[in-house]
Image 1 (cartoon, rainbow, N blue to C red):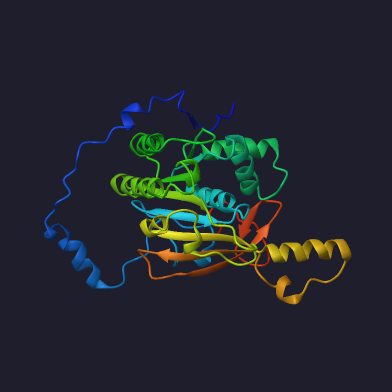
Image 2 (cartoon, one colour):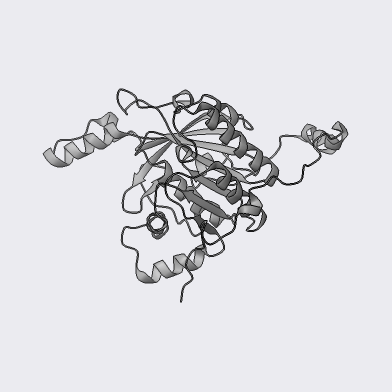
Length: 316
């Protein structure tokens, strides 16, 4: 019998011991403690470290290291959680454990989408589903709670995941389920500040999903200043990534299917989505990555051939 993915719920686990602050750590350290690290920086370019995204063209630009927080933002319905789920499969293939805390999707919905992404098609067999569950054992956990959640519970869950389960990536989906509302600027600032402290103190990477403000239309690409709520959100995190789907191309494709007319060349050749880095505190690169969508697998791919990736293997 295939084991099910471990679920963490407030009813099954006593998180109270993780809700209290740990013993204060000494923060005042002599500058000489960094002597060797500083000298090492003079010996040539430092290698890029951290977990990779599934697409090879991002490997020299974007990494996900312990001690940092990445904001994944975008318009509602533009595939933030879907793309991040695919990225999480990639983290698992690299031997880095992840916990998904989605307060907007049931665990089975999250797993069904990841199963299609791993199977590379829209009809995974029962045998493959069993193989997939075997593969994710020891790689993925899910925190099972829908709706609003108190910040102190998130604090406890992250500490538990880091201390007891040795998890390296924690996905919080989404910010607005963890604060009172869009106008609770102080609550948002305090929550993100808490996440940055947890990431740093426990050497985990926290992926925070967030929505952007509505514009006149969704054809224009949002930037880091379009995040809902406080401007302190993007100020505090280490990386800001925007996921944007080319809805104009999608509409043209649908119209072409209905009428038989050719799509305009500029839209036919355009990418299906963009991953935009507007902030990269510990790297020099900021820019955009073009992606194409393979609907059967629900995967984003690196080029217009739309060949799905083997997320459970080594192929990139």
